[in-house]
Amino acid sequence: MANRYYATGRRKTSVARVWLVPGSGNITINKQPINEYFRRQTLELIVRQPLEYVGMLGAYDVTANVDGGGWSGQAGAVKMGIARCLIKVDEKLRKQLRDGGFLTRDSREVERKKPGQKKARKRFQFSKR
Image (cartoon, rainbow, N blue to C red):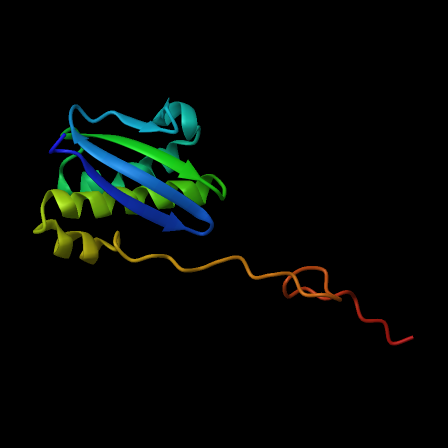
């Protein structure tokens, strides 16, 4: 298939491998329809954002394999993967997607828990006596 585009998206600890094929706008994630995999409407909207932004919502079928992290991280990873695929479809979309913030990797990660503390920053209650 010559018209098949591939890209990788990452967010938190999630990694998404995304394929874009010309089609009718079906989105499949881990071999499930998007509304079955992401049960929250907001996560579906996040995944569709780059396609809506460039006006190609019904033009391509999206297939994604996502691994690691939680729902939010996985949705963000798929979103970034779709945006990177769209650049391979048409290089002229790069500036538009960059301005929309779809190509910037959100590098925030969970801070590790420190020894002698309850969480990463929260300490045990101090007792003077």
